[in-house]
Image (cartoon, rainbow, N blue to C red):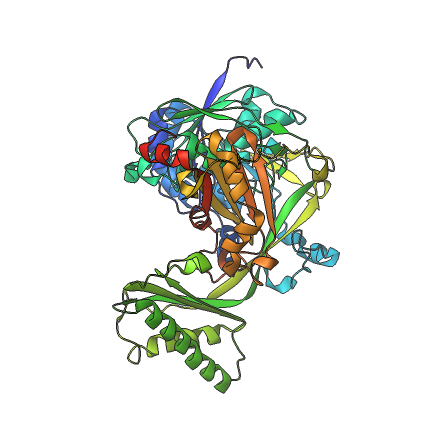
Length: 609
């Protein structure tokens, strides 16, 4: 296969199950070779597992059929665009059947391949008997009667094989998010299992595309630059055989593609940027460079790869009691104090009722006064807001205890301090707490199969190798800034972009200097200690108990922080207002940074950008 000079265009058309359906027609009109769809997250898998338990034909992302194939199948076929989607959820076979039925109904000639092997729920007894420990916390294996889903995170090579067998549409279950893109690159360019640098580069492309418009101005620090987000453009990667790529978006759409947007997305939800583990390769993004070459177009250099791990990360979800909560608003004088007092009395009344029913105390409670800087802890403003929202929530092993809380919250409405308000509707209901448990499964214990239009193909997994992150050569930290100059403090947002997200119960916060000249000052100001203090109110035990890792990415003039046990369990196991750390970057952007006084005037005048 001759690939020199060859490029392909891949459109990132979905970042989660339930996202807007506007991407597919937009990207088809712009012209692409592939459309990739990422529908899955750990929470999504547990939801799909419950749906499958109720209906053996369910448990997949039906949006892929109803919002992609049925309305746009003719255009997809006419343009020769190939689709890769992890829409299969916990039931890829039914998803494949639904796709084939839709294609037949439309009278199209499109071949569908379905990849299975990730779903390990039918091996629950054997897995429970082996009793693997949680890979991050060391926790014991949960009660197997409460487990909803078990899925290994597969890689990209089975996808490439399905494409080589002539598939126009490839449907998978749980694979790593970036694999839907890497699979296309492997197929088109003939990359092999030991082309680790190329595989890391293709994984980076997938990582940039996997959250759709987050690469084109969504969640961007300089959010006003995104313009008309009602018509935001979805990302397109123009990929070369050497692993380099450009990112752009369809003409005439809103949003923006810049060094800032792509840098933020590169750091989104990663841990160690020099040891980002994926099933096909261990990626090193630390020296990747991102350069603006045109309006709404950047070019990204290739990444480096260390090798492939000898295991698949495997995640199971399990039920662990119930949670419940809601929000109410207060306005007027002393709004925050009124809201706090109201919430405290709601719990006091509910706990009295619990004792009467012999239900025991709530295992965890949460009061957050949104609008009173509750997310900023000790670094919040002392001002007295005149309107706030109180978020009140709790956990308990028994759903009845949450029903009591929600009933008493409503029932205290006539005894409240003045200014209580809220959008009327049905009373909130308890919901299951779904926890995540991650462990490692040796690759040789996973059997992968490809169904290519009814023809079964057993895919042989290439085994990897053990990898020791301590052997990584770490870049030298930025040189200490000049200490003799007169200094002034400015908020970090003046000097940097930030993007944050979750990794289970961990949060990552990526900080990218707007100018390389700023980085030494940012590095010096943002110590692990000062960052711990900013998030002390989110960590059990406070700042002293916080575990924080700090990494340097010299290629993109960036820093990545990984904060452990800071999300109250994360996902739907948390009762926090921000259970996924999406706003944590905004908290850190308020951190003061000392810079030379001479720069302050230049920053105001816009001379340093």
